Picture: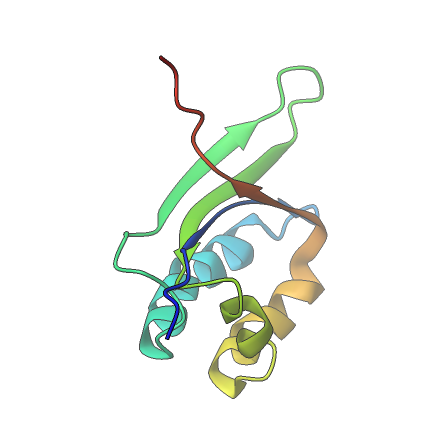
Length: 106
């Protein structure tokens, strides 16, 4: 069986006005649910509060690592994960998903 590589994600969550606390609460629960479903590596979740310097809009950034390239698809079929993701939709203005990987310098 071929080993698959983890996929590191950087997700930016932009809350609707006044929904910052509700969104942050969901983000804080996110990784634990993914971990319980065995969809992420043991790399701990990291969360940052960010502020756009031009607009002063506050948003949250989360970094975590899917176990493999199939994990996000499985998450969409998992009730526990959807119990976090569906309420997120009601408090999100927008969300940006980015796969990130390190660049090796010489």
